Image (cartoon, rainbow over all chains, first blue to last red; front, side):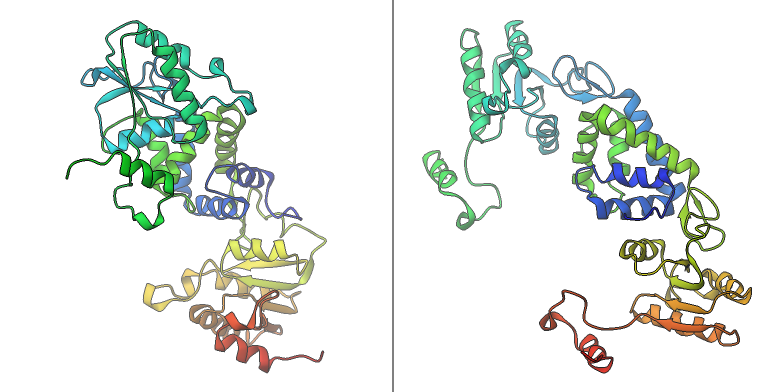
Length: 201
Length: 201
């Protein structure tokens, strides 16, 4: 804004809201105004929730998930199968898999992928933690649920190498046609992979 | 989320973020995760800014604008022309006009439009405040910058009636082709208005 039209506290709030993913400078103003209008119903509870989450949030020292307890809710859930570990790049991937509810197991969050161009090496990721978790025993399968990108696949190969000395089965997610997807819109790589991995009907 | 995968404080934060306009359930999760990752750079400052804005924000008793002082920054700005008043439906319209920087004057925020179907009558809007501001004298022109909707125009007509006894010029925004707009995409009403109000080239 060229001229100052509101108090510095409001302008600062708009400035910071604009940095939240999903909001830009324009929608941040709209969001701030909405919050101010819904002061009791939304602004006050959200401010309180932010303060509490900010104070209590921590990274799980076992798996790298974020939670308000350490070890996290998932790591301390005794009903989960301890023999399988799903390796993901990011906490958002962990949440996505949990929403899908495909497996009742525990996770290991790498915190990114190997990326020599950006200077991300093995020591920058939570790979040593993964190796020592597997070395401790009790884990029979590691599912590498990394993204199907070049970096993701390179990371998967590196981890497989590192785990080769240990008695553990290393698997990766299947490639294929997304459920509900139309063939017409899929790239050649996915289609070729789906044909190669075809199953009996 | 079907299963609890994070502490209640994080889930509550996601729930409340999802109610912010511009964010939905999915982007609220992404936003929460981003905040948690950028704890020092974004989460902490945003939480602080929210608390401060929440505590200090108030509605200007003169014009209905929101600010951290009362009268608001605009009403107490002595460099603004006191003889003209722009009437808007909402604070967001005030902010939009200020961004445009078209006039260096003061405003009056109605807080909505007359809408009998939704039970919004003249007493639900800040119309009495407008009449008394004008009745106090010193204002020579009231610009009705309400939206070009049926409700906006009905509200404009009502206000014009109410101001008819007072010595003040009542004007409205011009209808016409938006700057940068293409005729092909405009509705007939706008085109007709633009033709009617044509000016010498």
